[in-house]
Image (cartoon, rainbow, N blue to C red; front, side, top):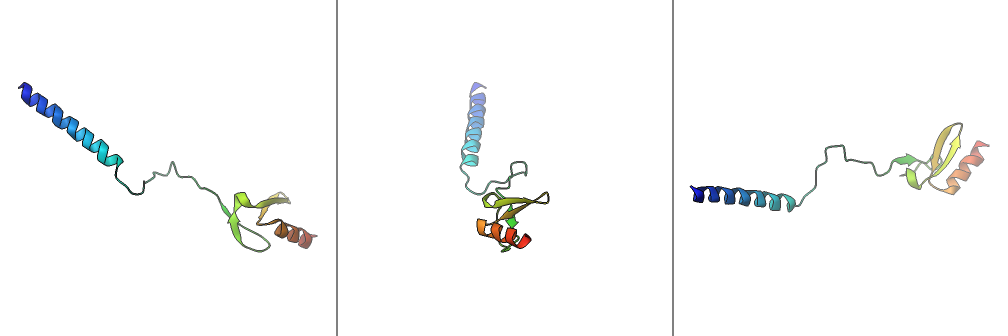
Length: 84
């Protein structure tokens, strides 16, 4: 009886160890459930040259309560010249 109990315990320990080793070592992409997804940056369009660029690297200007983003200082200056 003791031998049978020892065999069952060893078998369960083997299965737990095998599961832990093989689930952490499996390569491949990890799936996400949506709660850990984050957008790195938003792409915006320059109103002058019409190129798309990351919002965080743009130059902002507030016009009539609206924030515009420009890809460069030159585009911002062209917009201001055109507006006046």
